[in-house]
Figure 1 (tube, rainbow, N blue to C red):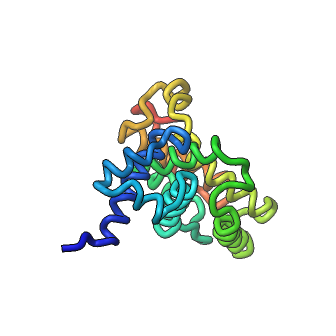
Figure 2 (figure 1 turned 90 degrees about the horizontal axis):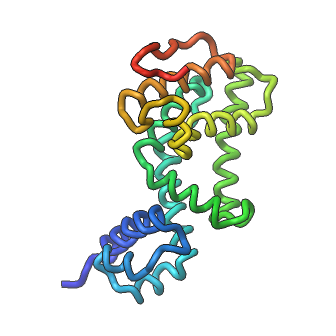
Length: 208
């Protein structure tokens, strides 16, 4: 019975996510991807192209999943920070892929640059809509507000060693993660002028 092509493709993409997250483009090996996916190496090249093309496809697939799972809402941009933090904390492979992308490509040569720029423009529009509706301060450039929110949500996930050094607790600990999430949402609310939000509980090693 012929193997299901869609199932083979799924296994290849899953194996490629693991490989690229661990080794980046230069260190990744198609032989390992083929072995871990129980697939044919030559078929991978024929279907996906070279390693850089495969990496671009893998990264795009993972970012699409993020875009569908987490969207900024004009009526609650502070909570967007918490949701983005949650998603990235639960999907460390995506964090690694984006780090490898930054190390491997000049900004304008990043995979799917134009398409992703359009996606971020829609998120900037959500920020601008929040400003027009009076949900957040309107005296800040919307595009820089979006950068601030993304950076606030993701920074400790990209440099967990700094979080360990500064806060003094394992940032991957679930209790610490919950404290940090609450801190991020409250801080975003105050920075944006979104009204008073509940502060994270002090104690238990909570940041701040």
